[in-house]
Image 1 (cartoon, rainbow, N blue to C red):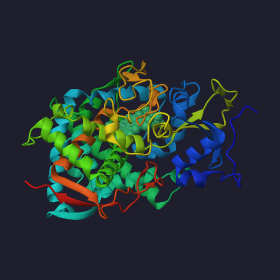
Image 2 (image 1 turned 90 degrees about the vertical axis):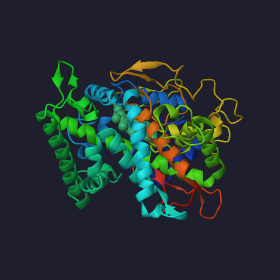
Image 3 (image 1 turned 180 degrees about the vertical axis):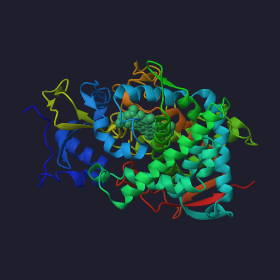
Image 4 (image 1 turned 45 degrees about the horizontal axis):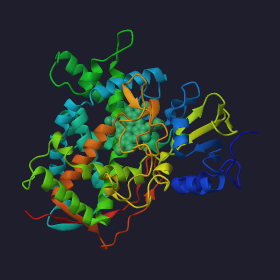
Length: 480
Ligand code: HEM
C-alpha cells in the first residue's frame, strides 16, 4: 500500500530489466522525471527500489545493519571469484575487520614507494609496446589501459615477484577469474558452464600461488618487506585470532579485483576525454612544467600534491563516468522513507545510484560537460551546493571498525560510496590514476582520430561500466 510507484512494464518477470540494463543512467533519469526520486522497477523478477539524490544516497548507503544487507546480494558473484571466508562470504563484522587489515597497507608511507613503482611500470610499458612505437599512431586505448592498470596495481600492491608472474601465467588466470563477474552470473553463478569451470580453476590456482608464497615467507622467517601480504599475515582478529592463510590469499585476490575494473575503466575514460579535449592535455603538460620544473624530474609522491589539475581530471572523470552505476542492498526490516509516506518492504532490493546526483544540474552547472577546471575555486562551473563537495573535511565522520570514514551523508558526489561499505581504495586509486596520467602526458599528445570533440558511448553490459570498444585515439610523441 505505501510502496513507492512501480515503473510501468509489459511483462511480469522481465519487467524493466532490458531498458535498465541497456542504459541505467538514462533509465534512472527518465523515471525520476515521471515518478520522483524514489520508485520501484522489476529487475529479473525482483522488486527493486531506486532512491536517487543526496537523500537517497544517505538512506541506502548509511542504512543500519539491521535494515540493509550487501553480502546477500553480492556473494553469488564475489565468493566464487575471491574465495571463501572473506568480504561477502562472512558476517559484516568480519568484513569490517578485514577492511581494517587491508587499509593498514594503504598508508602514506607505502604510497611514497608506490609512485616510482607505478611511473616506472608505465614508462617501460610505453617503451616495449608495439602499438606505441614510432612518432605517431592510432591505438584502441581501453585494452592498453587495462594492462597498465594490472601491471601497476600488482607491482605496487603485491610486489615484484607476483607482478612478474603477470607476464606469464597470472594474466590468463586473472582473465578467467574475471569472467565470473559477468552480470549473467547473478542468475547462473552456480551453473557448471565452461566459463564457470574456468573461473573455479583459476580461483584455486591463484589462491594456491599466494598460499605457497605465504608458506615460503613464513618458513624463511621473513621480516623484510612490509607489504600488504606481510600486513595481512601478521594481522589478528578480535580475541587474538590470526588470519588463516587461505583468507590472506583470498583478500589478496579481492584487493586486486576490486581495483582493477574501476581503475582501468576510469583511466580509459581519462584518455578518451583528453583525446576529445587536446587543450586540456596541454594544460596538464604546462602544469607539470610550471610546478615540477622544465626538466620534468622523476615523479614522487610529493609531486602529486603540486598537480591540482591532474587531481581534478580524475575527479571530473569519476563524476561523469563512475564505473559503479548501481549499488544494491537487500532490505531486512520494513524501512519507512523519512519525509514521505513510503515504507520499503523486505521483499524489495534497494538500489543507490550516486551517479544521478553527480550529473544533476541542481548541483553541477552544465552537468554533462566534462570540465576539470570546474573543481577550481571560483570557477563559474563550480558545484553549486552549500556543502563543499570537493573536500570531505567538513563531513561527519564515523568509525565502522576500519578507521574513521566520511559518512558522505547527503553528498551528491559519491563515486567511492559511503557508509560501512565505503571504498578503502580511494587514495590508492587516485595515486595510481594521477601517476599514470602524469606519465602519459609527458610522453604524448592525444586527439580523436577524426579530430572532433566527440566521446564514445558507455558499455553497461559488464558489472563495471566502461567505454564501448573499440575506442581508438590518435597519439603523437612529444618532442625531446
Ligand atoms: C568499495 C568505487 C578502487 C577496494 C567500493 C564502493 C564503491 C567503490 C562505489 C562501494 C560499494 C558498495 O557500497 O556496495 C571504487 C572506484 C575505484 C575503486 C570508483 C577507482 C576509481 C578501489 C581499489 C581498491 C578498492 C583500487 C583496492 C585497493 C574496495 C573495497 C571496498 C570497495 C575493499 C569495500 C567493499 C565493502 O565494504 O562492501 N569501491 N573503488 N577499490 N572498494 Fe573500491
